Amino acid sequence: MGKSDELVQTVGKLLVGLLVITTIAVTPWMTIDPINLIKLVTLTSAGFAIGALLLFNSTRALLVQHRLVLVLSVFFALQLTLVFLFSGIDKSSQFFGTMGRNTGLLCYLSLLMVLIGAVASSNSILYRKIIGAAVATGAISGLYGVIQFYGVDPIGWANKYSPVIGFLGNPNFQSSLLGMSAIAGLVILIDASVHVSRRLLSLFVLLVSLFVATVSNSQQGLLVFALGSVVLVFFKIKSFKKPLLTTSYFLTVIAASCLSVLGFLNKGFLSGYLYQASVTYRGDYWRAGWNMALENPLFGVGLDSYGDNYRKYRTIEAILRRGPEIVSNAAHNIFIDFAANAGIPLLAIYLGFMLFAVRKILIYIQSEVRDIYFEGIIAVWIGYTAQSLISINQIGLAVWGWALTGLIIGWKQNSDIPIETKIYMKNSKNKKETPVLSPKNLLTLISGLAVGLVLSIPPLVASSQVKSALATSQLETVLKAERSWPRDPARSNQIAVLLVSNKLEKDALRIARATTNQFPMNFDAWKVLSEIPATPKEEKTLALSNMQKLDPLNPTLK
Image 1 (tube, rainbow, N blue to C red):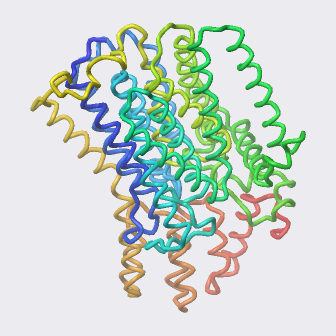
Image 2: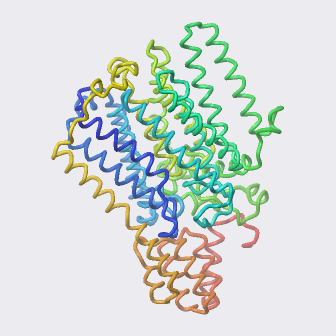
Image 3: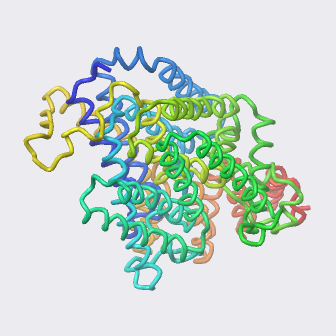
């Protein structure tokens, strides 16, 4: 592809480090949101470093071989920018994303750079490293999950779910991650060229991952692992070069998949094993998200704005099923999330990336090449994509999905270094020397990291200031922290309620007014304003009117 070893290896190392660190990074003693803000910082810093390296190095070969992918990338960034500029939603909320998600403009631009970096650096050596990184991440997350399961977690998480949430804040995310890690562990386990001690270690990680996924009370990890295992078995059967056997296996998998889908939908004999009430609830979220997309097809409702619009677009059945106060800030389907938040054009572009990956997988299947680690990349990617149909675009998981997509798109049939070459022999003299990073690229890398850090750190700092201020219980300190930029409606609402409980109604009223003015689509802000005793009657009437507009089917607001 004409890329220098220096650039390829540097970007590859950044990708490996980014995947591990972003997944496990948390700040429980530092910020109000201990999960997502630090992940945004690590993602953006490394993402911008990768983008800077690619931008300031020769990319002619990348442009020639992957010009359609780069065109899609330009359109993806352009659509995000247009939504950011013209949706009419608060710019800081769209740029950094909403509290608890942080999947705004900055996040998606960073993920896009991760994808392009993976395309540019895709090779057999990197596949092996990525699989190893997945196993290492699973080992750390799995062992921490064991600690949580046995109730000896040193971190006192404010968690309403299963205690097994890992470093992702939710048992479903933790379970999915461990399912992906278990697939990677299986890849190393079945690689006969790997030393037996490492294979045994991978087996241990695999078993721990599956155990923790099971006790997390979430089926997602086991299903992800089952799907990935099916993919790896397919490639193994294909290597036998017996078309009848391969076709029979493929048809069996299709039939089993159809029965499984029916089971998830509470139909067929598998329904008793696979169906969960949460599937029905996800249907409510999907319908609301799709309604947002249909009513706002070009730009959606605004980046990371699903939560502010859910009440408006949900059905009466959703209210009757769980009550009017049960809401969601994500569609629990990444594809619908794209359409709802940023319009059908962004969904189409994202599907384009997926189709490029599928096309490359089909080319690989039809070729005579066999690379068990690339097959592992495919298996983990399919597992990730499957869980993305019923889950949220959590940063710690999304970074894996985008990186894997890029690696698959960047696969090259004729120019990869085979796994069997001497580069993996124990004798170090047979290994390639690692190129030294040139001063120019070192400066570029540091500059990219610095830009990403500067862009992403403000909400982390603001969240830290609020946490520290609340610990002091000093009014002026709390009020100053509440005004920290970027302002967050959830944070402001929390502080306003706290002030009311301490008989500081005038200060609470001032915050509530500022919050409804800056975030008029935030239902909770209007609710807080309506419930402050010091709020004038006419303002309470206005607040109720806006609540009715934002939640038109809510019977308690009539």
